[in-house]
Image (cartoon, rainbow over all chains, first blue to last red; front, side):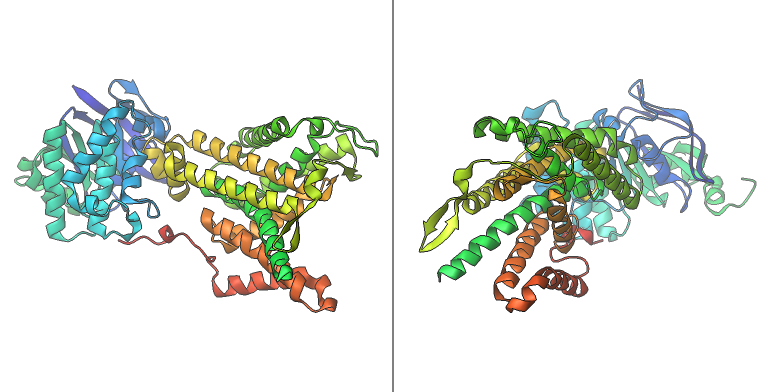
Length: 240
Length: 304
């Protein structure tokens, strides 16, 4: 079943066009990587789905409902949770408060306490410091926190913008290990943006490659390694 | 000793007034980066709401004659409604515009309110007697403290405690703090922008009403410009406190109140007329040393 469908959307910032007619679909439980070079429009794509930047044309459908032009809070309430680039922890709020911000919209209020405990089990270093202001955490810990925070909103689709940005390789491995496990446990649908396609190939799932605001390549991440077009897409050789 | 006690109470009660004003400004600034210069006119509006509109010299007391347990909730409601209406009618249209535009819109709104009051009540200050018994002094460790000062300080403490509990212990308070720090991120977590902003305006309006009540009881007059002075100092307090920091705004409000009273008491007699110059001089010094404010939020810089 298609959970998220993006149909032919275009996004412009003033005269600059960041996305030109991007179409993609994500099935429930799927993992989709969006990769591509700097400035390709990857973050814009996530922000457009989240309702943070308006789409100039085209439509976005979440679980059968058209959400194009809706407010970010409405889209979040429909189960789309975005972990934006740069993490955006609420630095003055404690770890526990950060985790709770997204629970205000949940209807299943009784399960919140259980979910909080399971997040703490998943990320023990958050549990140890639950009363610490989130601004005091290291980059890796903040990344764990924002993933936990997004999960506390009980999303159906979780989108993460460059989870590996600025993190040590060991921590990146840890983040991905957790993501893959969570996806299996919670039947979560994942939409992950990464600049490098290596991570996508290691993790598996489907992958699209964006360049210049267009999707230039699409397929199973594992097959991409054999594809010469991948290099061409990144470096702009050939007839693209 | 009794002199010192008197100064302490003067400082606390004046500081209370400024702290309440600074809170009203800081709450709205927190969620929408708006410095609401109409806040002073909200204060005056709430005071005049106790009088029947007339341009006669003698005031016709209207709501002001109600017993306190009805008058106080009514005025808080009036403040909240005025504030909410100004958000819906005016400020909502300026959301996401730059802060200077919003600030000018708030000046304009302030003018409209002031001139509305002028039309309805004329520019003459009117006398209004609320709770004259509060003017009587109470004896405390040998000093004679006006009852109103004690009440003002207590009201402020109650307001602060309630507000802190609201911000720290309730879901809406948490959402408001999150929104104050990063509005877009809060929305992406399902926090309703309009809800949080309306709530901030409602609380801010109630704070304006509380200040109006205290000022009117204190001075015994209703004057169209009566909120302006508090508003100016409250704004300065939010800047000194570190824009965006709610505890900072409160602390700086008390600090300015204290500075004002201490200068008044200690300056040589000839210099006392220039007390405000000394207060603002101190403000300039503080801003030169710490341009980001005394209590700038830690979140301003994030670790990567």
